[in-house]
Length: 184
Image (cartoon, rainbow, N blue to C red; front, side):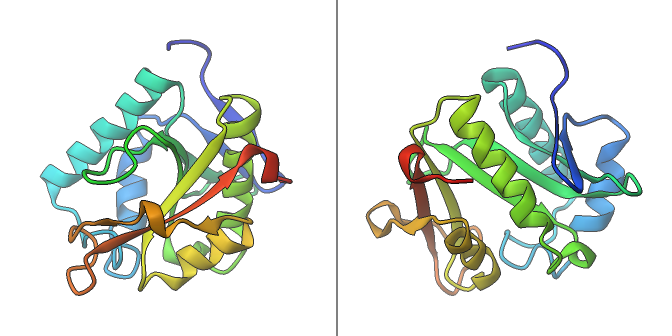
């Protein structure tokens, strides 16, 4: 699915393809105890390399990925947000998934919601998704709170066992929204 570089702008943000120079900045800002609390903990070199390879392969295979989120006002990399096909073992594999990860100093400013809205708009309008899911864990209330603010609904029927992100409560919870319910 090669083509023109991906770039999508919102009022305050740019969602775009990854560049080699983005990775050190991304990992420095997001591979922290606070950010990674509900994402399996801080990544070592091997996990970082595997994550980078996955993100780049999603773009290559599907034309979308969890893109870089860059703040327009100063060009700072805030994290990522975007779309992929669910690939979690035991989960709803193959379904379109929206996801985000932002550095801690970007929390509470509406950036995740702005980027997620843009990603959902793209999922339905550009990539033809009929339904989009989002995954998190029970303890990550900011994440599932955003899912609810986006109009997503709990899909307990799609929840699945996984201890990779929260060993104390080893269940991934799923939210979803269908194209005909999305009002962006």
